[in-house]
Length: 474
Ligand code: GDG
Image (cartoon, rainbow, N blue to C red):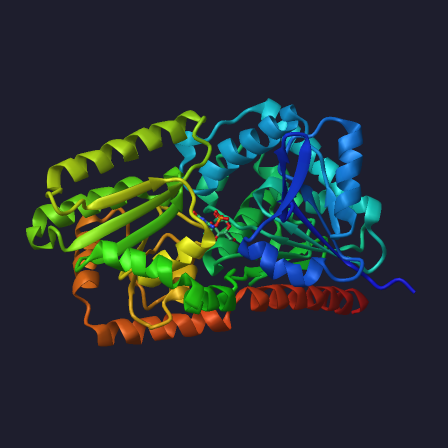
């Protein structure tokens, strides 16, 4: 007898194809989502459908890849260069991403990109429908695939469909700017359960459904022709144990000793972000400049390591941002450096996870100050690596994580005066206060970890189906 299976659908598979000459190598993702969902998709007949991270046009190669990945329960969707450019870079990253992060002036509204977004979403939905059997459950992920739930529902009326949005859902006044707002919402409400990082995101979504689609709602329930579906908050997390043990691993010692030796008596402040206008890099550098200007006592007493992971730097907005960051770092360094000390150590590349964990562990202060962020996992990884329970997290109230990590110093990144005050507070915070705050944050991240997130979402999807059955027999 066939057991019901779980089908995970996301733009990217948890594996990436890289080429070594003609040889194809499958690199597994170490990301939190891959770890969390690993407990599901690797099991039995379950399957993860997505793009394998490289444009492959030759049919023979596509067949080989599909074959190779079958054993890992992965099913690749191949995209042409045009599909990738218009659906992913175009509609997803140049329309939805800026708008959902409250940068409407950066959003590009192109019919051509929208049409390709629809076509590629249909391609993903068709791949699901091809393997879907009665009682299977489907979990669709993120803004690249917002039409997929309804596209599945249109052909499989009783399917059990969950959807999770990894980026913020904007307020109605921002969402309504989209020319395709009705279609996107109709796509989403094909799901039985819609998950967001925060309560506010889920409320904004429900509000848009009421005002744009005219749906009736009751608290977190929305009614589609009398059938209830649910929208709620499911704050994502990290694999706490993985980061905690990495930070405790004796093999990490050389990395840590090296960093500690280099920072000398100064306090170490770090930040880790992908190059993106949503991450608040400029406001952060301005605040650091202001800190040194107004508080010269910190000259030679603080070192700021700013790690920026390269991203989309062929796109103009990103290239401009990179230039501005380069310029500001160089100005600050030339203004304050002494023969013994350079205030900002700036890296434009990615680090190994080992080095990242060592950096988290040795940092006295972590600055996580985005202008807007769905959750922000760096804040939680920092907390998980502070095994001695010291350290201070400065966290933007615009990051989803600020709703859970109340013991961080929570700031508005636009308020430069309070930002500087928080920096001083962090630099001067007594160890007892650090411990008290860090202990409580570690407790939260350890308890509400990625495995907990997966379990709660899946159970809730089951509950929604029960609720729908109950109401339909009344
Ligand atoms: C979306 C949402 C939401 C960074 N630099 C290096 C490195 N990283 C890793 C971090 C962390 C991840 O990248 C970035 O975390 P984010 O939370 O920003 O997640 P994204 O995947 O970018 O974005 C976000 C998330 O989805 C989950 O729902 O939190 O709000 O935008 O894990 O550790 N990893 C390594 N070297 C680096 O240099 N190895």
